[in-house]
Amino acid sequence: MPTQLMNAVLAAGGRAPRVGDSVAFTNADPVFPTPFRVGTAGAAALGAIGVAASDLWQLRTGRSQQVAIDVRAAAASLRSNTYVLRDGKKPVSWDPLAGHYPTRDGRHMFLHTNHPHHRAGALRVAGAKSDDREGLAAAVARWDGLAIEQAIADAGMVGGLTRTQAEWAAHPHGRAIAALPLFDIVKIGEARAEALPPGDRPPGDRPLAGIRVLDLTRVLAGPTCGRVLAENGADVLHVAARHLPYQTEILMDTGHGKRGAYLDLRDAADADTLKELARGAHVFSQGYRPGTLAARGFSPEALAALRPGIVCVNVCAYSHAGPWAMRRGFDSIVQNVTGLAVAGSSLEKPRNMPVQALDYVCGYLGALGAMLALARRATDGGSWLVRVSLVQVAHWLASIGNLDPTGTQAELPEAEIVALCMESEGPFGRLRHLKPVVRLSETPGFYARPAEPLGSSAPVWL
Image (tube, rainbow, N blue to C red; front, side, top):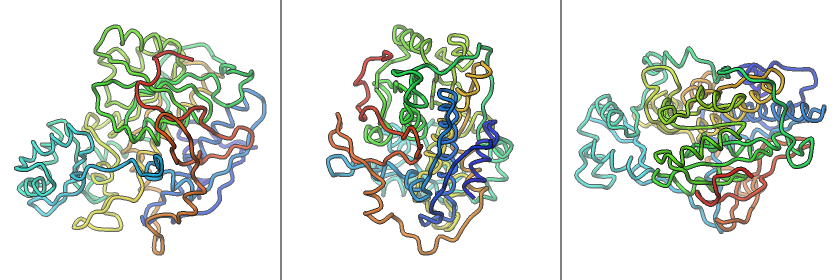
């Protein structure tokens, strides 16, 4: 099944199976206690990345590569932030207020409170009399589910009403997403064909050697896209702003291989710096809601005019289409509104998946789209836009069939976790984190630099 699913993923990006493709999958679902085929889904997306890396290597050298994927490692990669240890201790923790809350009409509202302003906003909108879980629960219990979901959205906060899959299928946004592909690659401008840059040692020692990536993303999905590109040799510059909230702990999972710089696009000089960086970039990846960066002059079309031949990657929660396109969302929220959180449980006791499959697979597909678009640009020219969202991944995951997870454990055996991990030393200290899952026969993935805090590097290309 992973091979068939991988080929379908590649087909969504316009890449048909070829004689000579060599991808070996080992192990199988179920891995974790969820009815969804999360290992298969992760393996299919990562296998497609391996094929795309092999294609780029063939463009450089005339040689293809063999690809190997362990389905259990792929499943583990969908919760890779939980395996990070900083000097032997776990750095990642959820805000205690995040989670499910019963409503007056017998439903459940899931609230995301990991960012301080989202936490304060949820308490304010709900009308909580104290800033603890008990106070928030008492406040939510006075609301009907649809009413508080709308109030949270209207206030620009993050939450979602837990639905069944049938309810979501009948929802206007659910219907809009059902009409979309898993992801797409759209031509947004004309440009001459552009060969892959040589990198440090011509013709490049890795598939993405010499490729410059601007990574304007936060949390998990978008940063995962940049990490995969760095893993395959790209120079990834992660651009953030001091005034925007960021869970620093997440960088210990997604920041490997990248440099981190600060720019504030409210400042004209910093905006000019980003434009100059874009002129020298090959990929511009962003994870803000549709239209957010466009309002500051960085729409895909504007970037294509500034730098013909650029590949733009847009990652968001609810996609570019439908009535909820502008809503804020995270993996946990999308699981609930689309019905994934009640599969294998119930509306009375919803339970999120034990993996953040939507985030990580979305990031994998963003990286895959960028790699396919770079290959297309090398042969056909053009500027390209890759579009993918958490909700599109949710629909895809639900569509590939369920299984019985009886007998699985909530966590892998410790010895297996250790075997899947590596250690690196850097500004965060000694980090244990997952190794790259995609195994390439000639250019094994690795991180050329350790993860670093935001703003550690200057906003310049190497």
